[in-house]
Image 1: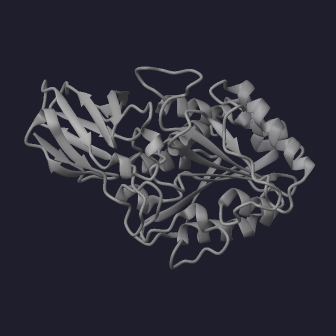
Image 2: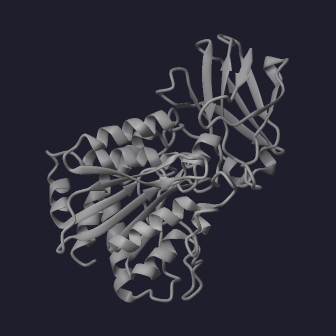
Image 3: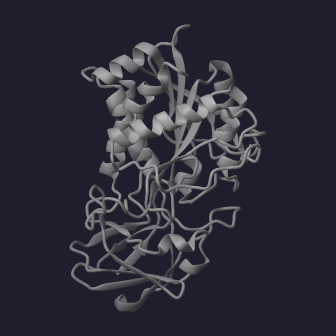
Length: 374
C-alpha cells in the first residue's frame, strides 16, 4: 500500500501506514499560516483491503466542529465522489472503507483541479457571449483568470461574481460550473434576459496558488484573501489587488462572493448589514434576493446562518463589506456546506458537486428579481 499527495491540491502527511487497519495520518498546515483542515490524498495498492485511516491531528484543525456529522468524500475514478463512513472521537477523524480498485482518492470535499479550471475557462471562452482576460499573475506565477460575459453598455448593470477566495472551499468552483453553463446557454430565456440588462465579470478561482498547494484558507504567502480587501498589495495579495483594481474601472452594482462553511450544514447568505452605508433599501433588496433564491432552489434556505453584524461593526477587510461600502452596492457572501444539506440529506453523496452546479444555475432567477432596483 502506498499513500501519496503529490498532485494538485494534495495534502496529507503519513505518520504510519504499516497496518491497513490503523493508518495514522496528519493534515499539513497552510504555508505561512496556522490554518489546516483541507486534506486530499490517494491510496494505492489496497484493492479489497479494509482500511481504517486516522487523521490524528483533526482536533487541532482550524474548525474542529466541522468534523461533527461529517463524512469524507472518496472516488475510484476521480469523477464521482461518494461519501464514506467517517467518525470523529477524541480529536481523531477516522475514515473507514474498502477500496474497489487499486487507486482511491479521499478528500475533504470533491476537489476541483487546475485542469478542470482550465477546461472551464476554455469552454466559456468558446462562447460568443464570453471574453477571457488575464488580470495578472499570482505570487506563484499563476494566471488570474477573468471571464466577461455580455457586452458593457451605459444602460447595463455591472455584476461581479467571484469564488474560491479560500482555496479549500472547492464547492465554490463547482457552483461556478453550473452558473456559467446557464449564463452561456443561448437557449436559456433567463440568461438571455439577464445579458440584455447586465454585464457579468466572473472570477471562477480567486486563489489558484492556495488551490495548487492544498491550502484551506490562504495564498502562497499565507494571506487570507478575504481579509485583504481594505488595502491589498501586489506583494502580499495580488489576487485581491488585481480584482479590486478592475472593479474600480468597471464599477459594481452587484457582487456575490461564493464560499463554503466547515460547520454549518446549510446554504445561506451572509450580507453587509454592518457597513456604514447600509440602508433599508439594501436590506429589502437582499431579502428579496434570498426569498427568490429559496423559491428557485429549495437547497437554499433563510433560517440558519451567521449572526448579523451590528450597524457600523462590519469587518471592512472582507470582500462583501468592502465592496458594498466602496461601490454603494448590494454585496453578499454565499456559503455552502462541506457536510450535507441538513434540510435534504443524501447519505450516498452528501452536498455534492452536482448539487453545487444546480445551486449555481438557480441564481439567475433571484438576480433578475433584484436587477431593476440595483
